[in-house]
Length: 294
Length: 343
Image (tube, rainbow over the protein chains, first blue to last red):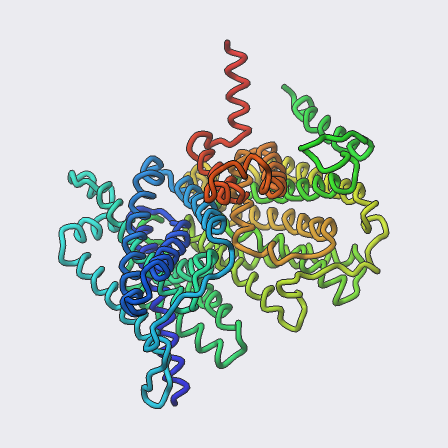
């Protein structure tokens, strides 16, 4: 019993990280039709911004305070990078979807290489408050406390995004844009400004995902974005592109499948069963996955 | 211009390249040692192999317009099945090569068949996921069959003497050159065949191709399988040239590199893919040698460290090409030539 509780909570915790990475991707894809390969680079940028904040601040501040500040910095850096990338690189290639993908591919290669050049290709250890590194007892299972932090962060982001989408004018424009962008433009609404905002939101979520991914792995490394990005892609495809609730459900499912299969079958089977899950979903319901930009 | 005349430049270049192992000249700064020395021959062999693999990827990306991120899977399958066939199963080279080609083709049918159920960007993500699954399997090294991070080396006892050792580098070079020639002929033939026309129609306008009576699904699947066959062949040649399989072949970076090569050179053009593959691989290996050179040391700390990363230069260059030369280097070259003729 305690095994199952442990696996479910850690699985959902992993899924929470996937959700943070995938929510931005899904929104960007849903609204703009851009598959953002640079999302992994956004994550690495957020992780490094957080790591630099942690190491840069004086030790007298205490680890928890520094981590909180690092999270704020990584969110801000992610949002800023997302905004700049959209305005400088994506906007001129409006409606050229393949070229947009290519530009983000080039950006992801160059950005990761630049980070490797400056800070080296090795992982840097990330400090963790003692309460976060300990375990919490739930229903007889010793669960690492940081999983609850991930779940709380993901729920917070999910709630905030849902509120944004459903209770604000901006959210109305985004939802309408996902549904039918041409019509929104025809009604005289400036969708371009919305694109920048969506990229900034996606970047902020990615920055957060990057730093929390660093907390999960106890270190930040230039390659951590790449592996996370692939699972985020899978989550976006399974969740139905552009659907936030779908992404949340798919993220939890992918995290659970991965944890359970890794435990009950051999280690490594979990990663493969995620791909298998994707294949099964594709074979059963291909039509639901096309999104608004089929 | 008749097709025969058009083939002349390619034929001339092939003859020149085939003669290179007899040229004992030194090209300082461009190639390590003499042109026919083992270092230069090995470098050129790798560059040519990658040129051929880029040509195979162009069948999917440039000629059919499918943004596939799964091509690395097929190249890696060719390479690894050959290595496993020779080292673990003790098969002779020709049998192992045939087995590798068969496995790659079947794999392409299955993966392509599933991934083609979605189109556009979703197709890109699904192929990426499959390639990633292969990468995970190779790195986990089940039953010690793939060699994990170390890679898998070929069984030297079963290898023909001709392809072994430093002094036989020219033979590996000729093998790579022959692979490019075969891939070139195959792509030429394919693009002139009925299936090739269907692929071009699908690339230009999928809905219209469907209305005209082409089976879009079949054209795409043929494209993926043909590209995978040539890519698998490239993987086999790659394994022979390098003496084994390397897990780098399975990574997402390798697929992205293939994409960068084809776009750099010019998508949908044989010259473009071959040139892009050759130059990218050449630049990637030569730029590493640049780090620590006096020019870089004179730059201030962080800038020098960043510029010394080959991928940073290639990635930035790639973004510039996408913006300012969307038809790639060959397209740029054609434009320059045309302008000269007008003036």
